[in-house]
Length: 98
Image 1 (cartoon, helix red, strand yellow):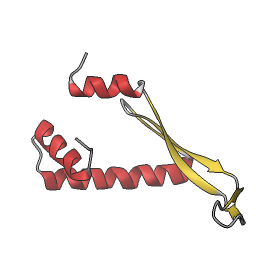
Image 2 (cartoon, one colour; image 1 turned 60 degrees about the vertical axis):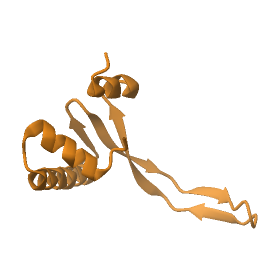
Image 3 (cartoon, helix red, strand yellow; image 1 turned 120 degrees about the vertical axis):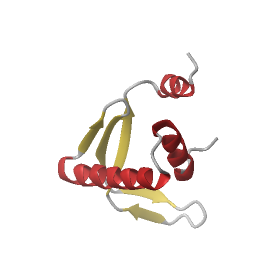
Image 4 (cartoon, rainbow, N blue to C red; image 1 turned 90 degrees about the vertical axis):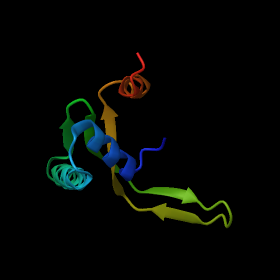
């Protein structure tokens, strides 16, 4: 099953006994705190999940496959996540597979 926001809220509500509205507030606040922390310090560690960090990508030239025109992509910052455990192992444990 895909992990949509509604699915995530339902799973958290089921496991914690909290109302879905409360879960949505917590997830929204978590998103804001992580975003602000990434802006301020460039990384956030979430125990049991991993480390979020900001990586800078320099400008790059690409060629349009249809027209052959050379385009310049501007520099940008990208958020990346390094998980604490190898992802297949972590997701298997979450499902109860061991």
